[in-house]
Length: 102
Image (tube, rainbow, N blue to C red; front, side):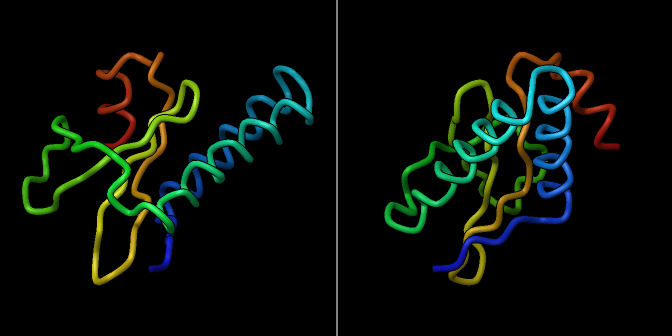
C-alpha cells in the first residue's frame, strides 16, 4: 500500500510549515510537519486506523480522517493506495475552510 499526497494536501502541509516557521521557529515547524507525516505513515501498517469523515460533500468516495495534534488528515482508499486529500487545523472555522476550497 502506497501513501500519496494530493497536490492540495502538499500545498496545505507546506503552508502549515511556513506558518509555524515564521510565527514560532523552524524547530516547531519541523516538529509539527514530522508529527503529521508520522501519523500518515501509520496508515501503511494500519490502513483502517481512521474514522469515517461524514462532513465531506462527495458521497461517491468514502473519506476517512486521522488526528495529529490540532490537525485533521483527510484521506481515501483508492486503487490499493491511500490518498491524502486534505489537512486542516480543527481550530479553524469550517465555513472559512469551505470558502477557501471553492
